[in-house]
Amino acid sequence: MKLEGIKVIDLSMYLPGPHLTLMMADHGAEVIRVEPPGGEPSREYGPFQEDSSVWFRNTHRGKKSICLNLKDDKDREILYNLCKTADVFVEAFRPGVVKRLGVDYDVISKINSKIVYCSVSAFGQTGPLSKKATHDMGAQALTGLLALNDNGNGHPVVPGLPGADLGSSMTALAGILMALYRRTSSGKGDYVDATMYDTLLSWTAHLSGSVISEGKAPTTFEGRSIGGAAFYNIYKTKDEKYIALTGREFKFVNSLLFALDRTDLIDLCKVDDCLVQKPVIDFLTSTFLTKNQKDWIEFLEPLELGWAPVLDMVEAFQNEHARARDMIIEDGNGITHIGNPIKFLNEKSEIKFNVPKLNEHYKELVEQD
Image 1 (cartoon, one colour):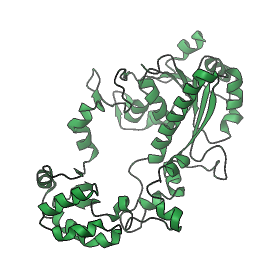
Image 2 (cartoon, rainbow, N blue to C red; image 1 turned 120 degrees about the vertical axis):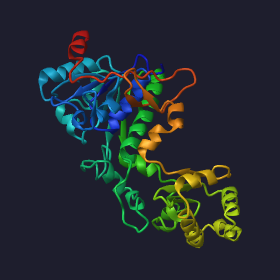
Image 3 (cartoon, helix red, strand yellow; image 1 turned 180 degrees about the horizontal axis):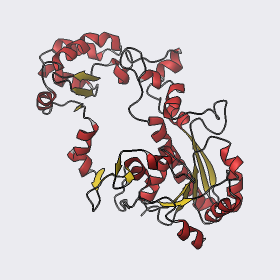
Image 4 (cartoon, helix red, strand yellow; image 1 turned 135 degrees about the vertical axis):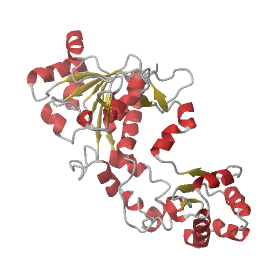
């Protein structure tokens, strides 16, 4: 596997860091999860299955667990010993905490100059917001993206997906892999400062045109890909379900409006001003309300059109494509797991389904080092 022989020390908790190191564990890395005396908090978050939190299982399968109190000199020395042979070190404390604990980059890099040390945080190690406490939604709020996550009336709603958390996880993974690649020629490790805030700002390329050129914030009424365009929008069906139109290309517009016998509306969709498209949105809104979702699926399936039924997560997990892509898999006991999205032609991920008990590998890890 791609990361066989790579040893990762992971001090992070909750979602971004554990998700990052799970991606690595599935592809062969040895991930040593250093848990605090009380254990990783997500161990206690229900629902539970097979005596394990499903959340914890989804982020910690295939890892090793050792419980260390980093305020204790003896336990800190154990961590130092582990770092001597490690390739990657991941932490997600608020900036300044690792320095107080004596496990910051300056200390760890002196122990092992080849180590790639990654800090995952909300706002980064520098800047006026660096020490601000928050989780995912705070980063979304301060990058302007939460304001766009509204219900059409300008009122922001809680995001359904923690995009800042999981985006920073993948940013961190990219940074770590870049640093490991560079190490093959330089022989030296590096420090990766991965943040929720920076990640989200880097994702605004398609949204920031009016911000940069006019100083005007985008809105869901006018934004082409955030609710203003007729053919990139969501429509309720008769049975209180939804159909999403997911492509604004003119071939899609022609296909659907011909099928609905409203070719007179086609030219409105050629105007790059979403407010002009309101008659199209009104027509599609009333039209989709005339049939149930399953009837619309049958009607839309033969058309050349970007669209999808809006599924709940149970329906999504049961979708045949999820299983065809090995994104929903089962272990030997019939327990469902989420697969790994990073796929290669020649070396597939090899998922280890075991979930470590708290401090299960203490003796093994301490004795080997």
